[in-house]
Length: 432
Image 1 (cartoon, one colour):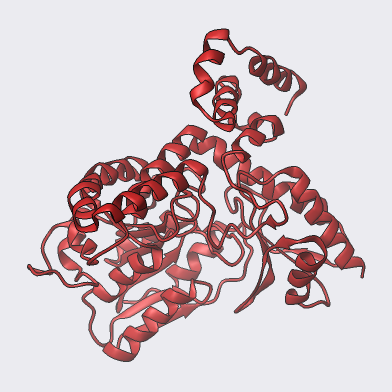
Image 2: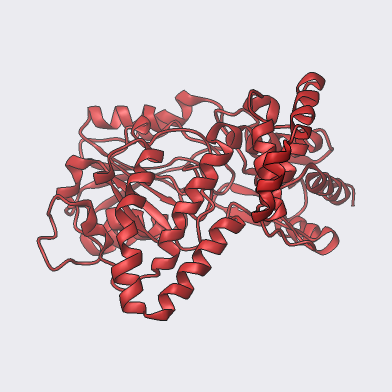
């Protein structure tokens, strides 16, 4: 951050009126400090603010970060901030006072306002958003709900998430459809290469293309819109796995030109664990069978038919609203710039170390928070274990198809001091 911007932030942070001070006693200290930092950041660009540790320190205080562990596996599931945790606990306590009353008659009344708020985030109609438990549930609702017949072809990548691969294989076994697998060489910054791998696999028999917006194994962002537009020219439907993209970097779902899109809200939105969202383009709803049958016409034109889950944890669902508030409070662009800055911070420090190999692009178009690293001649699992045993850094070793590396995923609460420890650990392992 330029020195002038840093001075401006610090000066603003110091300008705290007596009235505001006296009014703040009802708030916990971390909340008062965060509110003060947010006001001080007004007028500072997201790019400049990305490297302002004083500001992000206050964001960190919103989380209950483990003091004895550096969590760099936020790509698996992210912790929720305190406000989300507190809301979920409060709703849980309320539910247990009289479950059938408070869950079905009180908390469930919040679903439609929540649907509206998720739709605003997604940039679509509320009539295209279903609330469920995770992206696997959303995507498998579509995969098993598509009306396909023997001989129909699906184009998908070997680098897609395993749950989706297994779902398509089950349909292949059960219904006689054919999966046409493509094999991506990653990382790549070549849009034409990435798009052509899908487009060249299309045939007159292709009915669906499955595209992972951001490959969870190494953080590769794919050119979804370009592939989707070519698919639609051929009458092919587009299913997009947005488990890692929604609330991670700034976009609207309709921008992707997808027919179906699902996300896990407990990843980058920081909602409670076990919350997800499914988008179905309005005109497609009537063609999809719900995963869990309804008592009415399963082909009705109502997005709510995908929410027939029976008794569900309403206390989790309703706390999603607090996660949306937290996301809006930080600001999507600020968040995206910070996450990309953190990924590039550690990668740029280790990229010149002998034997260290990076498997994720440093360009914002092709990668954001998730990065992948390995050391030539050494096992991926050994690096993962070394980082945890010697430095108490929690990452995850990935051995999937042609992707081999330790996945490192910082988050908005991650500090540069944390990443300096990571750099020290990778350096020590590479030299050992």
